[in-house]
Image (cartoon, rainbow, N blue to C red; front, side, top):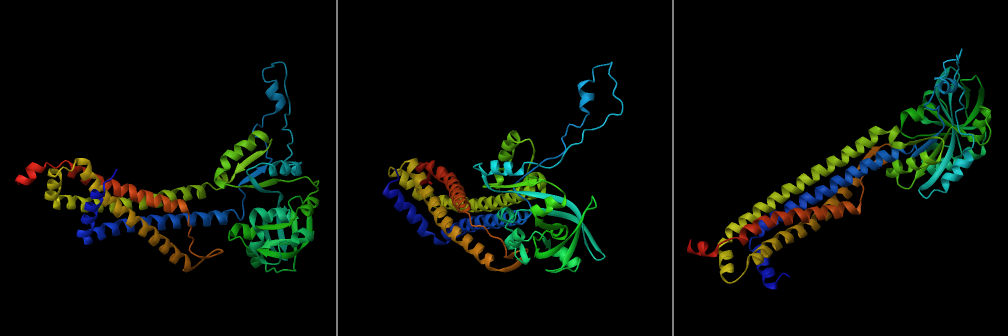
Length: 414
């Protein structure tokens, strides 16, 4: 229990040298404000990149691919039978795609982790308009499901995404494709599959995802129309896209689905390893810089507290001669460090929030964003304050421990 007398002595020490106290508080304030600001900015950048990526890919993709085991089945089963000779061996034709997509999506929607799911039929095609030709992907989608996953309504630059549901002959293309092929809403575009099937469609909208490859090579059509184009039944899909509540937990969820479904399950990190690595590196960098600043502030507090101990050495000796114990001396100087950390921590949180808020208002055009990205997470503020208190407490404890071991007799004798 800290006595009232120890508190009063600590307060007198703090207020008797206001300049030193102010410098110490300023060091903590600067350290914590930079910690909060750096984490807000780095988290905002990571969120921005994730938002841009997830406008075109889902958290989990389910598809049916050629199995990894490709040996001839007969050869494998009879490889030890010397009397059997297989001539002209052939691989068994394997059917790609998912035939029962509706059953799979119904199953997925019952999983507690899932927030949205939708089937797709993706076909490699050639887009032709006059002499212009672009090879790309025709994506047959369910308009409502696709909008839930990728928020396609906000990506539309011309036309309405919802029209895709009602116009079987309506095509929505990327803005780069529209620019390169000199197309606008209402124009016709010929789509030809690599099997030689050709159809004309009317452009009903133009989208923009800010990913040039997607905006140049991808077009959307009603899923029923694409199935009809490639002569597939109504339950057929090449991909099933899934979004879950926490996209950082896709590894656990994909492992669960792999054990339950006879299809390939791909988490978003597998297709975007660079993004995942960049997010991790930025987080480590922000933490390293912020902690370095806090540690430097801690050294400043240590120096100030150490100077205070040296200046107050005779007063400490008198206090110990009056009956104050070593624990009392530790309490007095530790209280000063904690007070500095507390005041500097609160002002640092306010300054960090203020800096982030000011930067957040500065115009900066980037993709679909108009300002620099900032994130305001409560845990960044709590951790910043906790780190600040921890470092200042440790910086104050070392000089306090030194002061507690002062021999009053030798000091008074000089």
